[in-house]
Amino acid sequence: MSDLILYQRDYCHLCDLALAVMAAARAPDFDSAWVDDSDELEQRYGTRLPVLRDARDGRELDWPFDAAAVHAFLKMSP
Image 1 (cartoon, rainbow, N blue to C red):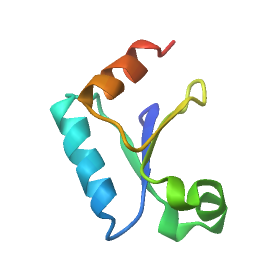
Image 2 (cartoon, rainbow, N blue to C red; image 1 turned 180 degrees about the horizontal axis):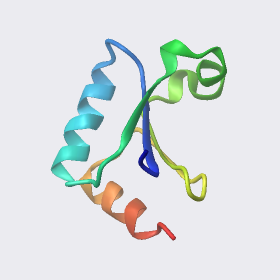
Image 3 (cartoon, rainbow, N blue to C red; image 1 turned 90 degrees about the horizontal axis):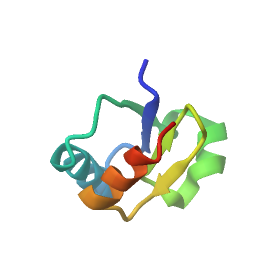
């Protein structure tokens, strides 16, 4: 299990864009969590998606983000 989680939903064009940004940023391995499958996640993230979360410290990077923002987010990791 990775420390990075990308929260997303099915059929979400912004989530597809976020995946492309993660690839362009050459982000390390991350897990995907599908908000559609959980009432708790739906309440927490709702319209904020996609969201990249560092499970180690709870920091979150909300969309919109680009490769530079992902790099900066990863540099701040403990």
